[in-house]
Image 1 (tube, rainbow, N blue to C red):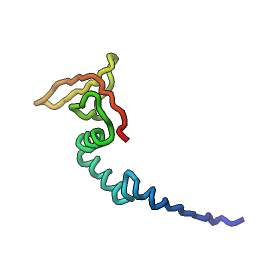
Image 2: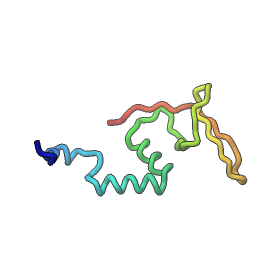
Image 3: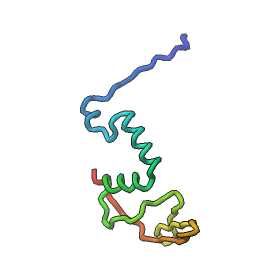
Length: 97
């Protein structure tokens, strides 16, 4: 028995490529860079593009935000000049696609 492994590449159909959400590896890398460079802007834009909101959101959650026991989202700012806590009702959305 040989230790060599056979690699098979299955390319997607032209229709699948045409309808893909991301246009290849370069498009994927560009989305990753955008999300890395502007986290809130990227996810805010994606949420507006891909979801229909019953109540429009006013802030993009960050990793420091957490659900509270009341079902709200809470975020704290520890910046010395803007130390505050923001709370707002959890938004509900449905996919627009």
